[in-house]
Length: 69
Image (cartoon, rainbow, N blue to C red; front, side, top):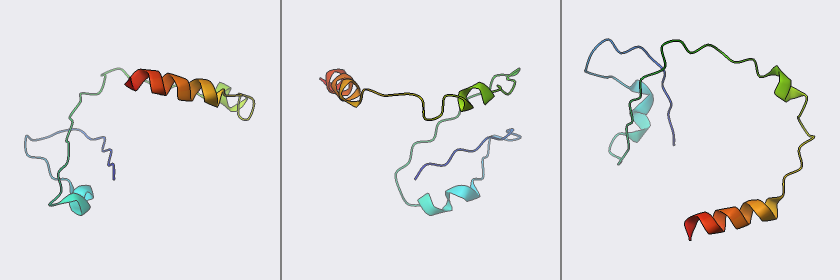
C-alpha cells in the first residue's frame, strides 16, 4: 500500500489518519519540500499520443535485465 499526502506542515508533530491501515507495520516515511513556484503543466498535448506509441517490450525487458546485473 502506498499513500501520498500533499499538505502544508504547521507543526513538527504529524497526524496521518490515512495511514491507519499501516499501524504496526514497517513503513518508510519520506518528507520532501515542494518547489515554491510549481505551476500546473498543461498535458493536453499528450492526449493526441494516446494509442499511437508502439513500445518495444523486448528492449524494455533487456534494459531491465541489464540494470539489475
